[in-house]
Structures are given as structure tokens and as C-alpha cells.
Image (cartoon, rainbow, N blue to C red):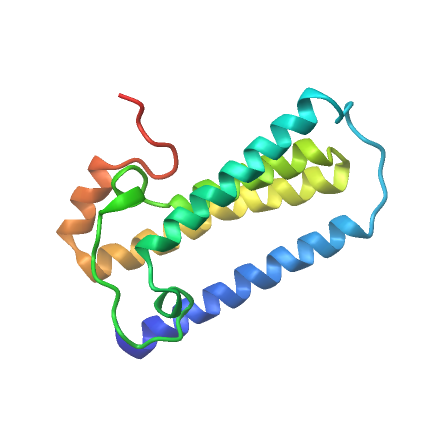
Length: 157
């Protein structure tokens, strides 16, 4: 994909990272009452969701070269369906969802709810843009992969 893809990817990473930082800043600077008791089971669930999300993202990066992922490298990433990519097409987004749910359970306030809703609303847009680019880049191979492998939640059977 060359230079255009490099700048697309770099711009995407800067935009999504900047947006996330703004959401976290917003969330940290607005005080609010808790929506429900976040102690006990909710606290443990929040830590489990967040930890599992971090693990999924860590495993996901085994399938990518970091410099290519963020757009620093001009080398084109090969089409691969190995590892976690054989179970879900967008494992980093899956991990992000788990972390967001865990964060909301850990700090269930109105600002946190708004932040998590923004993250969850953004992900379908990111998936759409990424898949459009991947279909253009890999054609029928990616379309078949898209039909065979779920986007975010692996099939159990």
C-alpha cells in the first residue's frame, strides 16, 4: 500500500490515541456519584475483564510488527490468519472492549459511562474503515476470511 497506507495508519493511530487521552482526561476531571456499588463482586469482575483485555491485546501484538502497525514502516504487512487472528479478525478491538467494560465496572460513574459509550461507538467505525482498506489491499482472500472468522467474539463451537 506504500506511503498512502503509512500516513493513513499513522493518522489513525494519532487520532484514536488522542481521542482516548481526551476521554480519559474528561473522565478524570468530572466528579460524579457511583451508579451502583462497585465493591465486592463488581470490583473483581472489573479486574478480570481488564486483565483479560490486556492479555488479549498482548497476544494480538504477536501477529503484528509494531512499526508497521503504527505506520512507521513502509513495508507492507503480509496477510496472516495465524494465532489469535484465526479466532477473531479484530483482537485488539476485542481487548479494548474488555478493558472498557472492566474500567466501567471499576469506576461506574456518569463520566466513565460516557467515555465507555464513546469508545464502543467508535469501534464499529474503526472496524468499517479498517475492513474497507483490507478488502482493497487483499481482495477475495480478505472477503473469505471475513466470512469465516468473526469480528470480535470468537465462536465457541
